[in-house]
Structure formats: structure tokens, C-alpha cells
Image 1 (tube, rainbow, N blue to C red):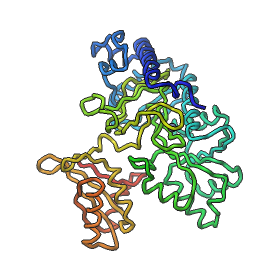
Image 2: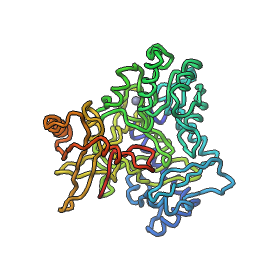
Image 3: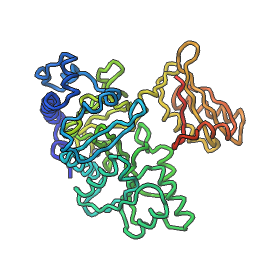
Image 4: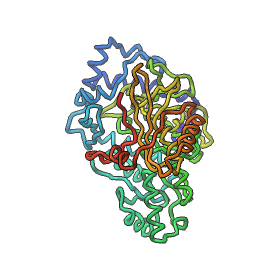
Length: 428
Ligand SMILES: [Zn+2]
């Protein structure tokens, strides 16, 4: 099930998107209080926007805009809204997204073609290991996508390995939809219970929320750990509430496929110009076909690399590599641009490193400094040297690394009000 437009040539896809861009601009000018004001404040005449290159003349929408003018983004009457979701904002308060009936249809279509990308058909059964409520969009999208595709779905929700295994044995799902690190918990439980993990119905996991690949599409440390015990196919995905669109890998596993009927994607440099093909930049999106809260040139804050060119699966749409990092967390260190995930990957490679925390701060010259504190039974010079050599080999630079007690690091990583461990402290 590949939509015709995704098999079309690059030129046909561009022409198609240009039409969709014009439709979107007319819709925003008619219906969006925010964009009406934004266009007139920026002196924008939308009739001048004819090609995809012209999109550069349009202003950018930031997370800050969404937070400050949240209600003004709404293009429909309250009576048309079916579903309300929230996403974390820039100033602490969550940002609200509303969906109409048509938006829920669009979401179902998006997830159905994204599942199909991962090889899911109506003969498959999916086990949903993430929550469907709590004002999240994702869980609902998975349910709607499975229904549209005609696939079965078991809504187990997050956590509880015992219940997950009970469902796997009762209903024989073929795909799991899960945060990949949770698969390690399932493996651990299976070992305790002497479940033969490689003799179940499960053939693949659709991995959400965490990366499983390096920039060259090889498995990262987390994925390798999973594959060591559990020989299932792992599919990487990338999505967000703001985009209401997913980028899922196909069976060739070389990046998440873009769906040109749902989103216009730009990869921009620091000056908001397109990066040269294949370079890392900030993903900036314009939603297509969204009714309640469409977004124009929304800066996602995610730094990614796009891979153009046809894919062996038959799709000609561009593919996104794993997220390199958050733009806010970009570190300029000794002339090299770094992102925390690359450093986590290196540290996770060392079995001797029990825990760590990375601190980023400005030195007296105003440039970025990195200090990595690690806890290890083997607090030796050799280990420090080994870690630094690894950093130099992989990232070309070696930050400061020092030992600290496990207690001191745990205290920093798990402050009393945080639900998730903190790996990075950014003092900048
Ligand atoms: Zn493909």
C-alpha cells in the first residue's frame, strides 16, 4: 500500500507540493487569526508564493509563538473540535492542540501508511505498549491507523511486563509498538520466567520516542542490546504532535519516509536557509490538510539529515536520518559541533561506566565547555584515557572526564521532582 504520489518522480512530488502549499496559504489567510495577523505584520502577499522556493519569503513559526498565541492558531469553531491533546511548551505550560473529525481522518491515514511502510498489513496484530490517554496524540493515532489498515490491535498500554507477556501469549501479536528501552525490560522478565523469547509470534517492533540507529543507519548500543537477546526486526520512527505526521522506516531501514501529501519538509541552517543536500539542519515543517491547527514553517528544534533519492521499496520520497540532537542542546566544542546523544552513545559503550552525567557550561571566554562525570568501580587513569580516546575517534574531540561517587551522580540524575533521569545539565 504505497500512495501513488510517493512513487512519483521528484519533479511530480514538487509540483504536487506547490499546489498544496498555495491551498494551505489560502486556508490560513481565511481561517487562522494568528497567520492573518502574522502575514500582515510581515507584509506578506500570499499570491506571490508560487513555487516551493518561494516558501523562503514566508516567516517562520516557533514553539514560542505556539505557546504565547496558542488560541489564535485555532482555525475552527469549538463545536467542530473532537479531540484535545497537549504537548510540552517552551515556558512550562503545555500547548494545546485540537483535532476535528477531518484531522482524525488525516491522522488515521498518516498512521496507516506509516504502518504499511513498516510492512504491517491487515493480517497483522499490533500490541500497543504506549498509553492511549493522558492527552497524548500518539496512542490514539496508532489505534486509528491500525483500524484504517484493517490490522488487529491490543491496547495493553505502557509498562507491566507481566501483562505484556500475558497478551503476547494470549493474542499472538506480530508487531509491538513500544519505546525500545522497554524491550529490555520485556527481555529481562522473559529470562526470569524462562519464556523462550525467540519462539513467540512477535516478528518486529515499531520503536517510538528513542533512536535505535546511528547516522549511518547501523544499530546503536540500545538496539544492539535488544537484538543480542531477541531476534526481531526493529523499525525506527520519528513523529511529533505539532507535525501530526510520522516518518517511519521501510523494510530497507535507511531513514524515515516523508509523506509529501501530509507535510512540506525543509532542512534549514542557522540563517534559515536550506542546507546543502545531505547536511544536518533544523527540520522545519508546513502541515498539509490539517483543519484545526495547521502550522506554516514550524521550527521543530530537531536537527536532522535528509536523504534524497529513490528507495528500494519503490518510494521516491526523501528519508530522514535519526535525530542528531535538539537545536537548543547544540554544543560548539573546539571547533566541532556536537549533540548530547552522540556522547551518550559513546558512554553507553563502556560497560565499566555505571552511571554518568554531562554538564555543559560557558567558560570565561564565553565558549562551550563539557564536563562528564562518571561513576565506576575501576576509577583508573587507563579508563579515563580509554574514554577520551573513544571520544577522539568518534567525535574528533575529547571533553573533560572525571570520576565521582555513584551516590553523587545519582543525586544529580534523579532530583526529587523529576520522573525521568537527567543525563545532561545545561548551565548555559
Ligand atoms: Zn523505502
